[in-house]
Length: 593
Image (cartoon, rainbow, N blue to C red; front, side, top):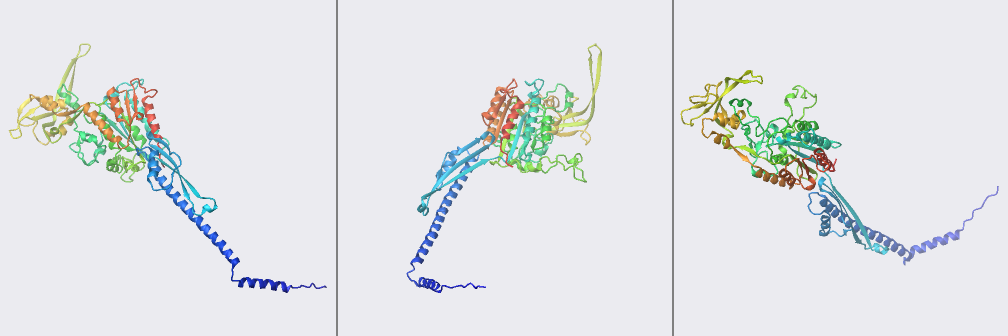
């Protein structure tokens, strides 16, 4: 086997090693200097570019922050200045470098409380190092978009239930009340269709010559007087209509429970007691406050019935209160009270009728309503009437409370035979039995007591009829008296012995509030409500011209006013279609989730 020989070129390796040693000993360092210089330039350029980029980002972030604040301010629907001008003003008055690159874009629909603002700006940032590479400046472009959306919706429906609502409407075979009930019911249904019910609360405020707030509401208002509990209205004075709120702790006179309208031609008309109290108590007349329970709202609307005069001013006053946060303590208490305490099983704590947790008067989810006046809370009032403001009556202070001079004996029984001839000429008789007898003290407090027995028409009696034993005649307070008899009956019979009985006990017993004053009050409260950015929709339903004007002036403007004329139509809209139009407009609000 032939062996391969390997030869090593020793001289070549020795020369290379010697060259390396000379380079390492060379103190001139020319080659090394080149390497260091190039490295330094690379580091310097990199650092310089970093500085330019930092300056760019600083100016960009500053411009972005300013533009964000500008569009947020401009998108606030409560901002009264033109949104585009707000954006421009922010940029011009700030210390930020840069300017708007184009006119701000505004999508504004105040009818539904929605506004979207888009703005673009740019700033040129000079470079200190990158210009070496052909970039003398960097341009930062920023865009900001702000849209105000509604997080919660509060609606107050102020609905007319006065006597004229019983009249025939222009809709065939339907009264005005029936048309209203159809329209309002559908409105409620539409409002909650495909919406989060916890975002929307509705209050219904029926009104005639007064507003029946209901026992639950007045029971949670410490400032309301408590001389009786027969009905649940309050009397407002002029200054109350210059305030858009009701303070639950402020003293308010409970409306006296009295009937000033019924006139009695017969003594025994007293058995009817009072049927037309200034403060109505009939079913469906009380307020349904702050709820999303559709069945309760529908039931309230279905139960409404017509009767009484018209006080739009008082209706709007209560509607405003149910949208104002000062009323929150009352609503909060109602959210803790059971709607029907008697229906609760003491063992399970459940509703005996439904088998589930008992219902509260106000749903717990609304325990913080009415909410504050904020941009994400939309408050809406719908005011509907078929008439105009008419007279209202307030019982004078002397007759509101305390003991009257009238006694009543419930144990007295009296038979009255009434006879008549029928259409065949035959005599027919009927015997009616009546109970109770009134007595009136006729002498001054310090004099010997003398009484007038009303039914017997006997003066000069030494004691009330039947005596003053516990089970006989009882002295009535004024609230008890007015709960039994009308003003007219009391003047005509209990005080028949006085020569001026009608003047004293009827004409001078109450104060009348006339339409002109009520129209002024209405405009005062409407102005205050609109000043809090509450959208007021006004509906004049087959109303006279005075009522049309009052409702138009109360509304938030042309786009918020509807007049359904005597032919039943507004253009092509009937009353149900008007309510549907309002519901559609409201539902355009972007309810945030």
